[in-house]
Length: 216
Image 1 (cartoon, rainbow, N blue to C red):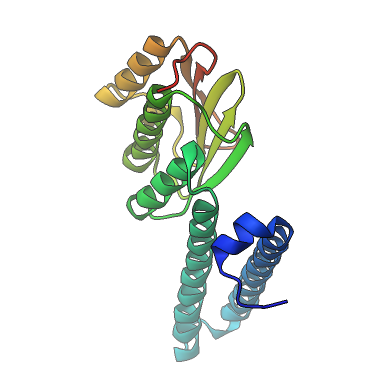
Image 2: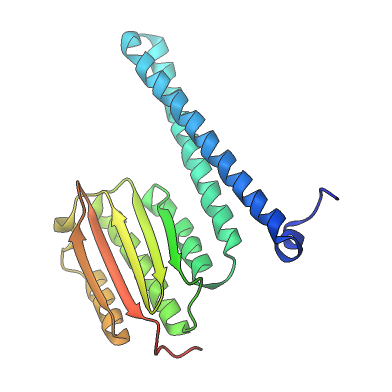
């Protein structure tokens, strides 16, 4: 069997090979991240006795490099996932998260549940606009260092963004962002709310029915 099958051939003709490759890639990514993280912890533990010496500064530089390598690995994983979902709302959500990651300063985790896509172009576009506003709020107000974007599609589309930032007090400041999200969801017959997360941060949940939306 030839070993130089391109990605299109794997996707279209040999789904079992594609699945094995995806699993192998994910396993290698997870293993590499764990190894780098473990090395960082060992260096961090070794740093204490060396405080005040040139070696301590060198170790801090190496720790910064390891943190950068982990961020890069996570970014590559997110881009691979985006490439796998090249069409539909999942692909567009991943592309938007990648776009916003530079502004946020970190890569949010992305979780998909339920159906792979929706039929309504209007709901598709509104979901992306709301996600952009949610992530912008995390950047502007939450002072977060991590976030999770979760999209669930069934009879109702549910978009949830969770962050580990300063909580509701900063997110509830008056502004066009919250008003815009509320206006969008009311027009679609859905709901929007914010709640605190524990031990810190906030959860924003935006939902709208998929049934009854006109496909376009």
